[in-house]
Length: 251
Length: 233
Image (cartoon, rainbow over the protein chains, first blue to last red):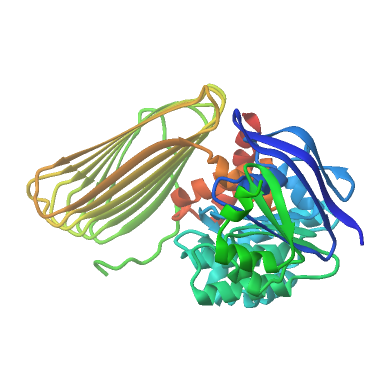
């Protein structure tokens, strides 16, 4: 299978503080990787580094996506290449409707592929189909982006946007946090339905429960900016039962 | 037809240097748009009579020196005023906008929304007074003034003021001066919207609240100004 993402010896700092301290990770098309770890381990920083957040500096190491160096790319270029970040805390944009937001995004992606703007009919069809995936009702498209959304609605909106943009690599940062059981089911099954042999997913999570819906091929434990253990799906259950101490203490 | 809110077509009001005194007569409605892309001093006083309604929008554009001094007198009960102001400024623009909303009698309402965007070395000063006379019970008066600064050199001041001499009234005001929000920009960019386009979207969305009473072709015509101001940083 093709290597999609290859991270080698990645060090990254937020401001002056080094958060990622030598990460190696290889992800192939068709795979789902879960990243777990205690608070402050660097999980969200890793996600934001992959998406190109500009207050993060890569100080050492490389990130290659489909063979290309990701580090110098702007966030929008990374999106055009097929990277998607599902935010732990989705941003509210009062005054901008979900429909206009997605139309702008879809059209920029099309522009990069040399295509003209999406037709109104086609766009509506896409919206309807992807809204159904995350069980959003019809008022959703005319509501402002995440403004006044419940926690569950925000996370469903992230999965909706992921479906609209059809990324090659989706990085979902705690898409399961703050969800009730129904929202968790919607997010979990939604993401699982988007799995294909030609795309890949990184799930950042604290809990086993999301992994019941999206069964990962690998689970990595991140601690103090490094991957300290890699296992299969059974590792999540073990962590749920025993916590992280047994892993940390064995280091 | 007293008290009705029949929509009326917005007319363009050409202000001449030296200003204007206008009135909206009893039971009638007027809707005026003032576009300002050249400088001057414009004192304007408008009287709104019983059950009359006034809609008034100011749009100030470009690298201009403008002094607007607007007084609205709500003199008959049931009078209402919806006031909007938008300034999109660049270069060395210098805009002063003073508004006095005088509630003189009971049961009038006024609603004001001002939005300012300053790029380049532009500066804007907003002063907005809502005055409610002792007789003007059941007044409903609201005012918002929000500003975005696009550069280090741009300046905006917003000074709202309330003078209330009646006790059974609703009066609110709010004023802010801020910058484009980085986290919104990053969120849009992470979806593939370019930095430039993301900024334009933010400015367009920001300005929109001050354009709700303005005809669509007029607000659509402002896109070029917004694009220019985005690039002019």
